[in-house]
Image 1 (cartoon, rainbow, N blue to C red):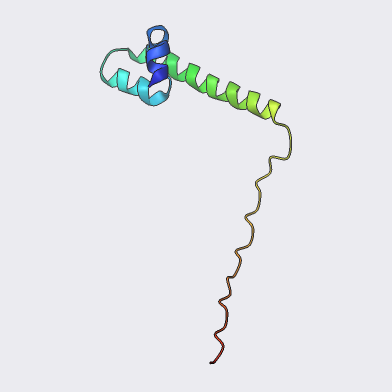
Image 2 (image 1 turned 90 degrees about the horizontal axis):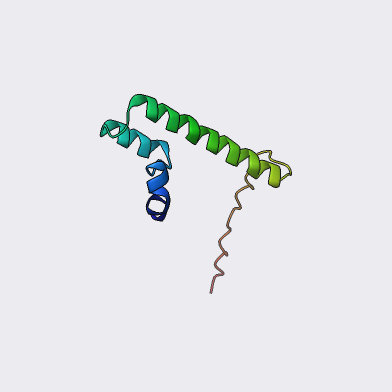
Length: 79
């Protein structure tokens, strides 16, 4: 919400595709404007992901989940 108020006057608060779709459905922007915003949003996502991967090198292979441990109950001792 802070971002919408902080930069909304510049971008119209189109920070994600859902906001752009909402503005399109409310007819506050046209189809062409929505497509431009969507292309920019996808390019921003790809650029951000590329920057993250470039700054965080290493093994990116999916890690296997550790095997589940079997919890054994203490055996009751006869009294």
